[in-house]
Every structure is written in structure tokens, then in C-alpha cells.
Length: 468
Image 1 (spheres, rainbow, N blue to C red):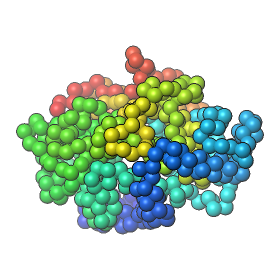
Image 2 (cartoon, rainbow, N blue to C red):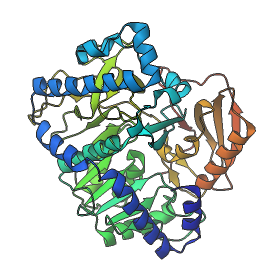
Image 3 (spheres, rainbow, N blue to C red):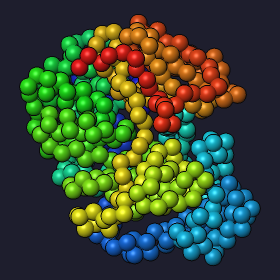
Image 4 (cartoon, rainbow, N blue to C red):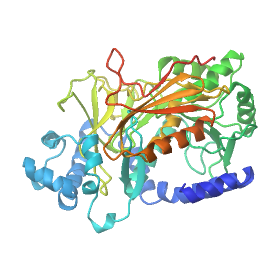
């Protein structure tokens, strides 16, 4: 929602907010499920059974189209290809990708305007944001085909979980990071309804021991068949259910946006008496990976983009060796990212899945590895719910949140030269809007951020016992 819509929403009673959410969903549906969505769904229903040779030929054809368009209409790539002697007319496909240097996050931020297509068909793009795994925000752009393909990939993930996405789909309870319930709310309902899709949108910001009972009452009354959300937030519900000696049977759980840890998966599956289907979708829209019903790894959506796994120097690593995920779009001609190196890591699996699909398998994707925050009023906050205040701030190179006490956070910022006091004030305001006005938030500007002994980066660190 844009700011004026959000203000209007906050002023409405609960019934009005439900209607506004449903109306806003109708607006978004035109982007997500219009255009070529049905065409992409049909393609993916068929292509999942293609062998690797047929998939590779299809990818090469799409990649050649992307390369030609990038050279003709995207200033950054014309400059890059000329400098490195990449001839679009003679470009063969995946085997020539390694001739193109990696696109880094830093280049994307500094050359964002030059990465936009100058073709008249892509004059208007949809803007998106990501805070990234290091809390370093990016502004991104998607054309209509990319939006449709993204939801076609999600539609297939739901189908693999035995569920249906969309207006005629399953009843879904959603537990993510949008502020759909005003933070000052102290009594239920801590959820809102999307009548268009028959979704129950649960607040991630009111998960306190005192409130959790009302969440379970609402879930049982709504009777969802699917729960979709952040692993850490769903784990809180699951742990409390099991501690009460209770369960809440569902058809499927879908998790994303965080690394799903083994103990979380086991607890969630016991509490909800169903399997967890984890999926990974990069905000840059170059990689999408999903679990099928065999749960033998994450299938790459090969129709979505081309995925490489490289070492620190951009060289391919062997199967079962972990490296950086590198993705190339096959659809987003309006803002084509070619050989974009993400901050996420995984490994190709040598074995094929026993389901028989030709889509390659990768190991679980390592993204954020952080702690859940516990607030003075007992609420438990997922780290992914804290990404939103950072997304508009391009002046942040990287960040880290450290909870030292129940009511105290230190936000460490590596600033870019254009960072100002207004950015700090924005962070404090938006974090307090989510965590409560009683939370003391200190902004600390630093030159570097610490890593664990194994070299991994934790964006959120809590030094407070969760108490669950």
C-alpha cells in the first residue's frame, strides 16, 4: 500500500480494514494473475517433466533473447559486452554465460538506472524492495511478465503441496511481516480477512503468550487447510501448541524468507500434523526453488531463471560443494539481471529426485540465520518482520540488530556517504512502530560488522531468553 492508503486503512474499523484488504487484493490480482500467468502455468505444468536436455534447449533459447535485448536496450550491458568482447549475435546460451562478469549487489545499487531497459514497451515497471541478508537495501524493478512468472512458480509450489493458490484456492492462514493490525492493539482480533482469496492474515507483531490463545481460537474458527509464513513465526505457534499437549491438523505448511532449520521443521510438522513445503524466492527474481512431496531437496524452477553456484571468484563449483547462488533472469526484460551474485549459498545435488522431474535439485538455501526477538510484553518477533523499515533506505551498506535487553536494541549501521540523520530517525520510528514505543533503540554507525567463528553473518542477534 502507498502511504495515503495505509493512513486511511489505519483509521478504519476492523470491518473496514477487512474490506480494504480485499479490495487491494483485487488490484494486485490484475498484476499477479493477469497477463501471461495462465500461459506460464501451462508451460510449467508440462516442462516439469522434461528431461535435462529439453530443459537446457529451452533455457538457451530464452537466454539468447535476453542477451540480445540487454545489448540493444540496456546501457550497462552494451558497455559491458563491448568491453569484454561478448557478441550477442554469436551467443550460444548457457555455455557462454561464464564470459560475462558477475553482477554484484554493489554494481546493481550504483548502476540501477543503467540496468533499466530503454525499450518503449518497458517504460513503466513495478518497483520492489529488499533489505537483503545483510540488511543492505536494494530497489528493484519488474516487468509484467516477471510478475506473472513469479506467481506461476508459486502456484506450482502450492500444487506440489496438494493445495491451490488464488481466488478458488484453499483457505490459507498467512503469518508474515506486514503490519495489518495497528501496533497499539491490545485485544483481539490480531488478524484481518481477505475475503477475495478467503485468507486469514495473522499479525506477526502480537505473538505474546497472553495473545496466543486467541490466535488458536481464530485458526480453529477459520479452519484453514494451509498455513503460509515465516518459519520462525510458525515455529512459535507450533512450540506453544505442543507445550499445551495439543495439535492443529492442516493439509500443508509453506515456509519461506528464512532458512528453515531442522528442529523447526520437526516441531512444525508434529504440531500441525502435516508436511512442510519450503520454498526460496530471491527478491531479485532470478532464482526460485521449491520442495516437492518427496522432500529430497529444493527443485530449481529452471523455467524461471538460470542458476549457477560459484566460488568466491565466480568459478563453478562441483556437485555437493557449497557456493554462492548466481542467477540470470529468463523473463524480466525491463530490468534484466544477468549473472547476479546473491548473498545466499547452496550446493547442487548430484542425485536426481525420485519424483522423476527433470528440474535439478539444490540443498537447502542458507539465507538469514538469526534469532527471534522477545519484547517486554512477551511478544515474539520474527527477524524477517523487521526487514521492512530498512527496505527504502539505499544509504545503508549493511546493518545488524542486537537485542541486549528486553527493552533495548542496538542497530549497527555501515553507512554509505549519503546516509543522514533522517535515515536514523526513519529506522527508529519504523522499528518502534513494530516493537512498541517503550523499546529503546540506539543507532550505532560502524565500519564493519562481526561474523561468527565459522564466518557466517547473523543479521539479528538476541541476548534474551525466548521463554518458550
